[in-house]
Amino acid sequence: MTGLLTVSCADLLEENPKSIAVETFYNTPDEVGAALNAIYPCFNGLDVMGYYWALDESSSDMVYGRGSYAILSTYVGLDVTNTTRIQGVWSATYRAIRNANICIQNIPEGKELTEQQKKLFLGEAHFMRAFSYLMLVKHWGGVPLRTEENMSELSLPRSSASEIWDLILQDLLFARDNLSDSPRLEGVPTIGSANALLTEVYMWLGKTNDALAAAKSVIQSGKFSLVEITNADDFDSKLFGINVSASPEKIFYLKYSRLIQGNAILPLGHHASSPYLNGFGWMGQYTDTTNPIIRDWDKADLRYEYNWYTNKNAPGPTALLNKKFQDKEATTNGGSNDMPYYRYAEILLWFAELEAKVNGVTDAAVDALNQVRRRAYGKPSKMASDIDFKIADFTNADEFIRRVILEYGFETVFEGKRWGYLRRLGIAAQQIRDVKGLEVNEKHYLWPIVINETNYNPAIDPTKDQNPGY
Image (tube, rainbow, N blue to C red):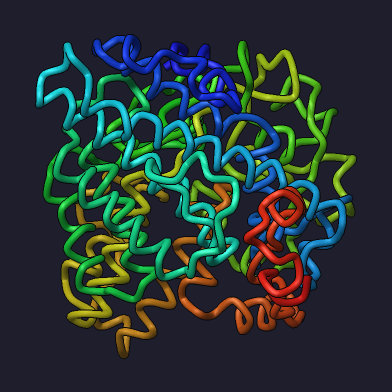
């Protein structure tokens, strides 16, 4: 995957796309591979996944933003500082879309590619375009829809959110039907990746039966499993640490190397005095033992021990910092930890939620929840245990789903997931009210269309086409 990071995102994004001779470049597997590789670095760096993660995590019911991120934890929308930050997220995501579009446009004409190679390469490009648009639609709603057919047009109106979702589904169905179970490189999407992304998309769209079918496809493929642990340190050495390149739990991860452009999420969670990032860190996010979810988290759950630590520079005597992502050998404010976007534990919890919504509290739903829970307590995930839930523990499906939602928080804290879960489930306002005693302003749910787009895209009116409150 280091090869992916050596290709500059900007290399294929000159204003004059003819700087690459199309007729001589997209012909061999190596040439197309290089073009596809240029999509991935667009998601590296603080300006993209760093800010994207930080703004979401600061909005979580379990986490608090600090310093310039503190405003996110008041749920009043973005201030000027954070509005400026999302410019980088917007621009880099559209660069990824541009690179995917270039591949989609040119791969069919490759003279030295077999039809099977074309399908695989196109599946990857369509997946990454869908992945990119999912980042945009979740946080901006409708955005300009740029495809291989109009990618050079400057003036494009804002498409509706439903049109963006339609393209995402179209791309993912194509990707699912054309990708392989064996990626061409570590970190490149597979059929399992496509089904995981499809599951999330269907859940956002309220297509519960389709989402359940997609989640089942991942589980029944037999390609993935939970990483078994026996102590808290195993989470680092076997699942999240810098030396974990591949594992049976990884479905789709963003790959990082501190030698090129490190994972910018790490310094956001650590103080410079922390040993977990070798003397670096900005401490942009933290939690507190007074938070009801943190307070009531069973301390026998190994995830609690693994995730949290105290630091004398933390904001208050009850504050905790997170060590899920740590690189004790870091040489800059960035580490080598890969960033999990989809992993098997999350799919099991999605399945549990979806199965309960469709069929009620079934043995299958409870077992999926229990697998994740057993692993959290250091027990074999596939064997019955004394910490297992039973169907009789839940009076109805809603009560069961509430437990799954809580488990989402324990399992994916500091992965930038929680705020999205609360929004998707339609419970964000109530959850923030219950846990933090705050009200969520309507403008907090969507980010503002960035100024570079309103300034330079004549089809976007900076007032009429702006999201509410900005």
